[in-house]
Each structure stands twice: as C-alpha cells, then as structure tokens.
Length: 278
Image (cartoon, rainbow, N blue to C red):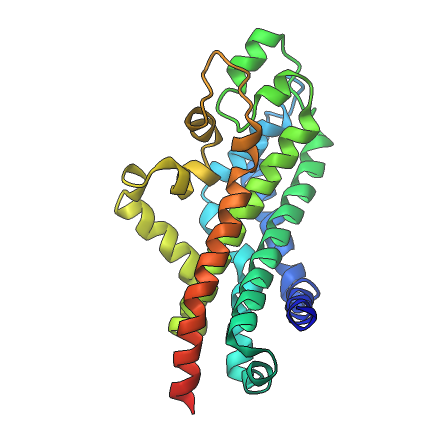
C-alpha cells in the first residue's frame, strides 16, 4: 500500500507541479473572465451575486475549451509514461493493478485541482465587483437563484458552503473527463486524440441526446450542470429548502466510483497493451 501511495503521490506531483498545470489554470481563468467581461460588462452591481457570473461562465461558449484545458495536464500522465518507456520500470515494481489505480486517480485529482483553482481565481475577480449573495429580499432571491445548485444555502445566508459544493461539483466534472481521457489514451495512445477526447465525448453525448436516455443518477448533464434536477431526484421539491446534502456531494461520489470502475477495466487493457509491446 505504501508503494501504491508513493506512485499516486508521484503522479499527482507530476501533474500539479508541472508548467502545464499553471498554464492550464491560467487559461481556464482567462476564458471565464474574457467571456464575462466581453458579454456582460455592465452587469456588475449588488443586485447580482457571484452565482450569476459562475453560471454565465459555465453557459458561455468557453465550456468546451475549459473542459479540455482542465483535463490536459492529467490526460497526459499515462501517455508520458508510455512514450518515455517508464512503464517498463514501474510495472515490474508495483504491477498493473496498482499502477492503473494510481495514474487514474492522479489524473482525477490533477484535473479537479485545475478546475477548482481557476474557479477560485474567477470568484475573487467577481467578488471585487459584486457580492457573494444578491442584495434582494428573500422571495425575489429565492426565485432569482432557483436554478443554481443548492441555492437554498444562498437564501439562508450560507454562501460559503453553497459555492464550496459548486466548486466540488465542477472539480468532479473535470475529474470525470480527465479519467475518460486517460482511458482513451490506454486504448489508443495518441497525443492529439487524448487532448481532444474530453470535448469529443461531450459533443457525442449531446449529439446523440444521451441526456434524455440516461437516468439522472448516472447522467453527466444532471450531475455536473443541473444541480436542481439532482435535488429533485433525491426527493426535493420546488417548495422545499432547495438544498440536499446528498445531492450536494453526490457528483463527487459519482466521479470517485466512476474512477474505480474505469481503473478496473484499465487493468486488463494495460496488461494486453504491455503484452503486445513485448
């Protein structure tokens, strides 16, 4: 177990302490601020809150690029190991099972860190211009924030927890797509394909309208982009508190389980890939 955590720690450090990590975090922050500043320059006032600009950044045309950029430092972890030949030394020491779990979880952690950090910097930028909670009376505030995940926390004055859960959800989204990219890189170890795979999967998902087919509990759209729908799935109602602890942490839980399942599949893929390379 010590060896496993050692490899996990090494790959997380490789992702987080890399130049690519810093560049990608900066690019995600830039895209968020660029779209908001260019499209909504006149809307900074105390009748709007941070949630408004977080939603605008997410729903702008930058969401595809943000996902791809956030996943990039993580998606390359396996690719770099394979192309450099380091796997020939790592696998005999810890085995395919521990390696796949280590590299896949490291990818999830790295991508999540990019997304959470860029959202944090963006929030600081916005909070310098407008409040965390809109300056509205309670009824208007409830109606105005209805579509935002866990908006009931804003209505009760608990903005920190509301935004913390939002950041976790977006971190889980980045982790999900980074794991998809690592999985793809084990099937076809090609750098351009690995880079664009998060966006490719996202586009195919919407092109085939899979969000109408999949149940909400395994539906990436409901989990990562529509917290209100998830709130309703866990028994919430529009007349209720608009906050559910289970709905708040479920996206992160889903990403962890998804990472475990993908890692188990990757064990067989990596063993087959290693055997073919010998």
